[in-house]
Amino acid sequence: MSSVNEGADMSRPDGPVVLGIETSCDETGVGIVRGHTLLADTIASSMEEHARFGGVVPEVASRAHLEAMTPTVESALAKAGLRFSDIDAVAVTAGPGLAGALLVGVAAAKAYALGLGVPLYGVNHLAAHVAVDQLEHGPLPKPAIALLVSGGHSSLLLVPDVAQDVVSLGSTVDDAAGEAFDKVARVLGLPFPGGPHIDRAAREGSGAAVAFPRGKLDDGTLDFSFSGLKTAVARWVEARVASGETVPVADVAASFQEAVVDVLTRKALQACARYDVKDLLIGGGVAANSRLRALAQERCDAAGVRLRVPRPGLCTDNGAMVAALGSELLAAGVEPSSLEIPADSSLPITAIHV
Ligand code: KG4
Ligand code: ZN
Image (cartoon, rainbow, N blue to C red; front, top):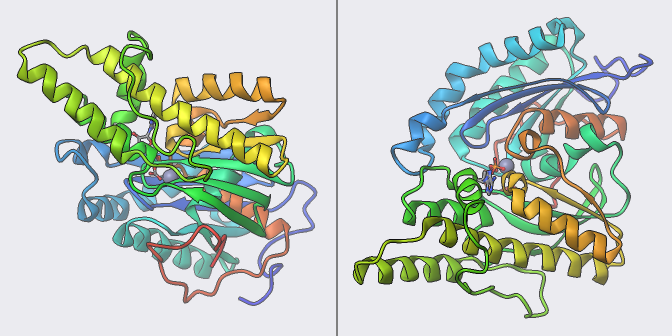
């Protein structure tokens, strides 16, 4: 597969159709896009199988991907009203993520690309979280600042062009933001994954109830740290339990959440100011957080920065984001991936495609 146009009908007025496959964690996501138009976004999740372990079990996730792959692809095609012969290119998450889980998606994508005679694009999961916003809000301004907050990553990125160039400005030095939500939820006795439960519980509480620490807030870097905050919450709850008092779950959830989103939004706007960029994008699972969305909007309005956040369903892992980045690469004339590409569990953010 040496040419971008091989198998891809670039001459169609409405653009080529890209099938995207995501299997980096517990979601088997299959998306279909035509240019920037979303045609289908189908997800099978194995989360229920992991919940009782309090975290994603890699072997369970891999097996679930294997079982879900064919039905999820078929269901996406049915939703889009398309047949296999309508697919012009296949994109797949090549990393970062769980090695075994990634492998299932990469192997399936290679088989579909080979069988259909269309180009394959192995893409970066993190860049895909950025690219997905284009399905909802149109082309991404160049450059933009992206705040990427998920269960595995928390990064600030300068994005001159999501198909060509992504620069890391800062990242977490310990826990990812989503990981902190999940761990604090466990301390509060809330189910896994904790983010949505903390979000919900916090609505009944006060973000000012407990003054939890804001790690690295004014250290001059664009890095984050959430491990000290997580420990502070655990100690606070332990002290309450030890003294026989009830734990005010809603207040603790709201105060913890406030500490996280305060730091995330401040640092994101510091990045915009430092690089003189007027467009901020927030992506990744934690971008579904209602308080993060509200505070980011407030602070962007005050700073004259335009904010873009995809709807919650496109923030958490999905196949549409992979198809969106694949479509972007195809349109930019990027050379397709070889059918020999590996799944790379620690693919760096600067490698947009492999
Ligand atoms: O992007 P994602 O679906 O998967 C990864 O690539 O990690 O992110 C999952 C993370 C989990 O830690 C989950 O708790 C968090 O996103 N999350 C949230 C919310 N919804 C999902 N965190 C805070 N508030 C939410 N509403
Ligand atoms: Zn993700």
